[in-house]
Length: 369
Ligand SMILES: [Zn+2]
Image (cartoon, rainbow, N blue to C red; front, side):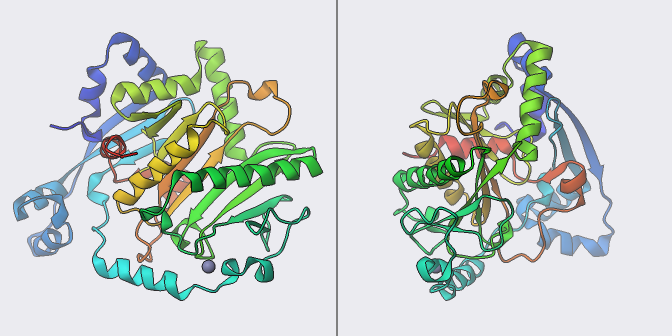
């Protein structure tokens, strides 16, 4: 049987003593079974609705009657995820894909197709025609990289190349450095790419967002810095190196030069990948990120969030020593679905996820260069 999150107990039991000790420093998990007793008149509906859960009607009903749940928590950061494969959404059908393509086409000619006329410049102007200011900013320094191609799903085409990822990373960093030069207190750079409305984008044309915070880093980045510092004090070990090593020992990591791509054991939502790079300008990062996006493309992902955590700009800050550059990618689900994937559980408790990180790791390893 292939490795899966429902077999995490066996996989962890098979680790050598050193790997096991490291796993136990970082993670705890618990298994339970949700028992569901459908009345007979419900059976036809269940067999049809959940047909992807098994080859026969009886297999589908059985999958619903006893649902294995795995709850994993990162002891260091408190990030926690409940896995239940039964909650997987139905596979996308062709009609949905053509509806999306039509909607993308219909939005051509919008503001990001004519940025010089229809988008504002920032305090220091623009970088070529590639950047603009956000018309409704969420921090003092808030800019956008407008992609040359209108189609936000260009990452799913063969034309999409690693050089475009390198250009995006460099342009965003250049913009942040200009903000920092104009305002030396603005040091805390964050890059995001929200792809399509499910990921929070209000404009379809492909774009990424940059913010540069003052005084302190964005809350979740600062939280992570403190957690890693406490881990160092408690265990005399590097949290990020251990995070990578645990994922490697479980078969949840894939290397791309000096960058490790992790199929995250406590994903915030479906198919979360975390790339761990020595630094933002590491020459292996664009290729690793391109591979991650190609993996998403092959898995049928259309809407996703991407975010980059990186130490402050300017002179090296001892408070951030050893903090790597982390790139997060998460699938936000079917753009044609009206239901949001984030509810009370995600905001206030543990994330609820159906995609298996072991399947994601397998897809990553199959990625071609
Ligand atoms: Zn456009």
